[in-house]
Length: 302
Image (cartoon, rainbow, N blue to C red; front, side):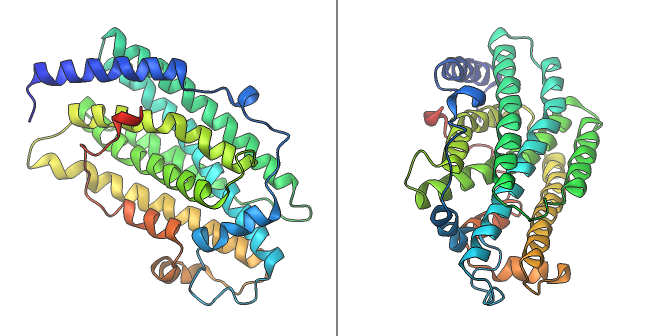
C-alpha cells in the first residue's frame, strides 16, 4: 500500500495527465457528431445476437428480421436513456467532491468531468430521440420508473454520512454504469465497422471520455477506502443499487418484446437474465456481483 505522500504524488501526476487529455481528446456532441448520419437496418440487426436478452433462450422464434431491428432500436434507446439519466443525476454527487480536495489539479479535473457528463447526457438524449424518429407507429419506452429510481438512489447516496463513506459507495455504484457503457462501445465497435454509423459515433465518442472517468474513479475509491470491518459496507449498499437499475433496464426490454408480439412476461426476467447467451448481457449481469477492485483501471488510455 502506498503512503499518503506517495498517494498524493501519484494522484497529482495522474490528474495532470487527465486534465491535459480532457483538453486534447474530448468532444462537443453538437458539433463533432454527424447528426445527419444514419445507422442502417443491417447494422442494427447485426447487434441482436450480441445484445438481445432473448438470444439463446428460444423465446424469440417468432421475431422476424424487421422485429429484430425494432427490438435492437429499443435496446439502444433504453441504454442511452439510462446513461443520460445516470450521468445527469450523478452531477449532484460530483459537485460534492469539491469539498474533499482543494488542490488545483483535482478541482480542474472535476470541472472537466462535470462538463463531459453534461455533454454525454445531451448526446444520449438527442441520439435516443433520433432513433425513436425512425420507429414510426412504435410507442416510446416507458422510462418514468427508471428516472424515479435513479433520482432516489442519488438522493440516498448524497445523504450518506461521512465524506469517505459517501464517496466510496457513490463511486462504486457510478463505476458500474460507466463499465456498462464501455462494454456497449466494445460490442458496437466489433459489430458495426462503418465509423460514420450514428450509434457507433455516439458510443465511440462516449468511450473517449469514459476511460479517463474510470481512472478518476480509481483515485476516489483509493482515497475513500475504508478499513476493516467497514470495508465491505460500500459494496453492500452499492450492489443492490446496481441490481435494481439493471432489473429496470431489462424490464423495459420485456416491455419492448411484448410490443413486438413476443409472449414475454415480467416474471420471466430472472430466468432470461440467467439463460441469455448474448455477450453484452453476460458481461453486464456479472458486473454488480463482482467485488470492488479499486486497482483495475486503465490510466494508459487516459
